[in-house]
Amino acid sequence: MNDLAIKNIVAEPIQRNKVEFWAASTIFVFALFSLSIDYSPNEFYFRNANVVYHYYEHFFWPQLVRFTIIYLAFLLLNFKVAPRLMRKEAIWQDILLMIAVFVAVGVVTGIADTYFKAYLQTRFDTLQGFWNYTFQRSFQDTLRLLLLFGFYTFIKYLGLYLLSNSSAIQSKYRMVTQDVITVFMAWLVSVFILAVFDVGEELTAIWTIVSLSAILLYFFSFYALIPKSLAARRPFLYYEVRVLLVLALSFLPVALLLLPMLHDGDTAFGISFFNALFQLVVTAPATWVLHRRQQKGREEVYVLQRELGNSAANLDFLRSQINPHFLFNALNTLYGTALQENSERTAQGIQMLGDMMRFMLHENLQQKILLSRETEYLENYVKLQMLRTSASPGILIETNIEEVLDQKYIAPMLLIPFVENAFKHGISLQHKSWVRISLHCDAHRLYFDVYNSTHKKQEQDPEKHASGIGLQNVKQRLELLYPQRHELITRQTPEEFFVHLTLEL
Image (cartoon, rainbow, N blue to C red; front, side, top):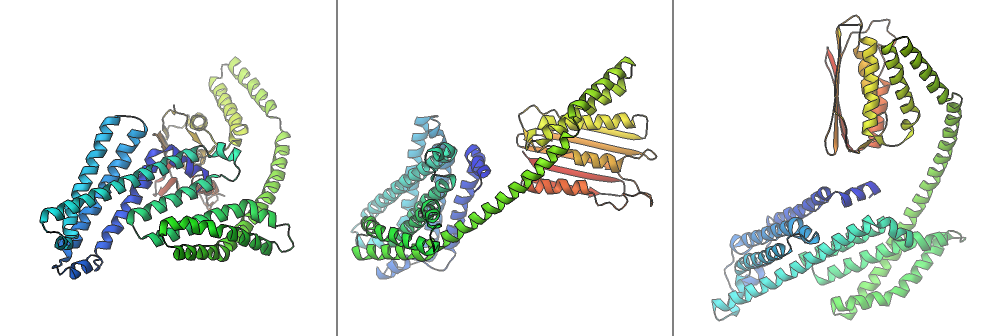
């Protein structure tokens, strides 16, 4: 997961809620799908108790009701109650709502269990005794689910806190990176899901220990074992021996950790042996391969950075041959002369040209600039074109560029190629021509539309068969700078060319 994605999840509760909602909905859909499989785990108990069994009455409908009420309760608690409790808003109201949810889930699942576990009636003398037992177990299970939800909420907000402060944490503890925190939180969530669905103690224990051991060994090898093994004559063999030593030392502690979960010494030591073998044969070699690939990638990046540094130095040298201050001073002189001669249009054009040159020489070198500066450059370019074409009545230029007041940022020179292309191919001094430009920006998106007239090019026109290099370049920049965050649509008719760009800022 890259830094930008992590920051978006931390800073954007809407985005985070979408991830949680679709994850919960996916689990709910799979649970419903499992009901369509012709398999009833409770049918065996009905047969043994000599109770007549009906699939829909004793399995399908009770489980459908159970899954639905738990799903709806999770949505209410996770997206309404828990966030307001974290913000300390309407605490007593949310506590009462949580109690109401607990009672509702306990009652509904209890009613469902009177059908799902109807085979237990034969163990009780009265129907009231069966109901008391069923509802008591139902509320116990609901309390367990509520505690698990509290555990999940704690994991989620702890993870968000750690991710938002990962830079400060990593400055003190080098191995505690965003990747470590993210993987550890994913492991906790996976254990939570296994506990909710009650897949069995042995399977839960195997996954918990093996996955956690793999995570710990991966990061310990990445930052400690492998770097210290590279200087050896046979680095991989030396690394595997050190891994074997670590696994041998951890064998007994892992088995002791499993004992409280399994209550069986043989099973605990068996899983501990399987864990050690899995880490030695699978995790350790995989970590070695990934580390070597990353090291090779770093070397390639270093070479590229060095080559780019040389190219940047050459470019700076070429730029230094023409002093920009000389050009600005010369433009200021021409601007003053034009004002003295009452040439207001000429002075205005020189001023706008100077602003554009200053933008290209300074702000164009930055990775991101204010959107207001990009639109200002755009407007200066359009005004210069209007000065050039003002004497031609058959040319119509319309702009609707909204003023950007918020602190929004964009890659420089990203919009101007579309406008340059419109004036280059859409304006003809001999034919009726038009260019229409509109720019609108809301909370997170920019909408940019450009229309221009099209004209049949003469055979002797050297650009008749040109492929539109400017548009191709801007498409490549969009793919690199805004992957999966933009939509570019172009359409052409015999009379008009249209470009629409939607950009997530």
